[in-house]
Image (cartoon, rainbow, N blue to C red; front, top):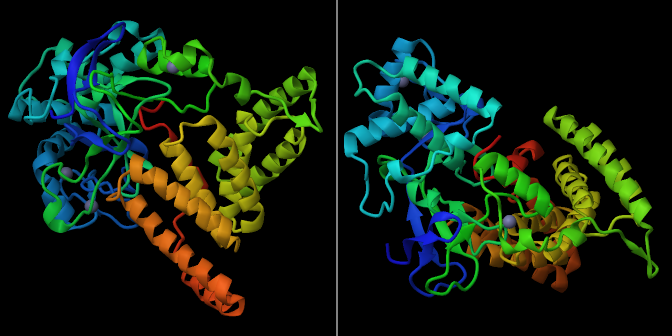
Length: 487
Ligand SMILES: [Zn+2]
Ligand SMILES: [Zn+2]
Ligand SMILES: [Zn+2]
């Protein structure tokens, strides 16, 4: 590896540190998964080869489980799928995603050895499984997985001890990484990336990890080659400095982040931001009205009320009842107004949902108002090169464009482009989309300034073609926030 090396990170076990000076947007390494599988919930919506979402998929005639875009995807995946295919056929059904992933990993390692590429910095044996840290409930589920794995594993494949199977399942449990669709908007699969497992967490990290499927073409669909992650620097990193990524969304209070990290990854976060509770005050702050602070009691009351409304809203959102979502949010933001600060995370969540859902329902004017508030709040909380900030700014920019607020929209799209050039890189499909939008809005802005009448007629035509329609359903956007393992 050219830019990183394994070292003993004090209090964290193994970690990676930089061996050279790095700058924002530099790729520290890229890595293909050892194996990856489609999530249980999406087995009928996503191609098991290229992980694209498709309306119509063709089933594998043998197992009737795996589904593909076409013959090309099926052929390209056969090497990976053939042992699974036979196993599913004789088992009678497909086991869950953890078991499928574990089976794929073991088949691959049995075939190619513990190290499958010359850039792999760790073997699976060396990774931690955290089985002894699991709580009773997790352990119960975990034992069911082991049991089902043993049932599923074909007699004809090489046999392994229960200990080594537990180890792999344990590694998957705490190191499985969400694999998104080709546009990076929705988590569709889970994979294991051994080098990425070595990168420790920090709530205010110096790197970000992004899935880049690159430009796929039929010739490019060799074994696993189409899916890869990139570890990208968010700012300057000095030689010897540990490289870190964040496993959780920064828009949680430090105690909530610590709890999530403990629950899912079994460690106590001692990062600077958690230790100092950095920005926690902003995330729970009350508003100032005409120079006067809103009384603490009132802020508390509305915070508590918002918490309940958020739960209600999430439920309606899961049911795809978007009119109900809008109703709940509108009611809530009315109460939050002039009581909570514009950085209060419960208010930001409401603004975020409102802007997404309203723009999905095509109420662009109102959506853009909330989108702008959201981005302004995010700017005060997130790292300036945070990928979530970039994506939110992009969505807000598109919403403004749709609302006819061309100047603000263009400004936001430019800002989003600058962030995504660092977090996603120039070759990522989203960055390319953004580039096209930047050119389009720039041209419109110029026309608008020259001749408003011509501009409006052109705009009508542009809106009808919907060149910038890129929003998935609002429910789908949510899932990508947590790239690391679900729960
Ligand atoms: Zn496909
Ligand atoms: Zn099959
Ligand atoms: Zn932390």
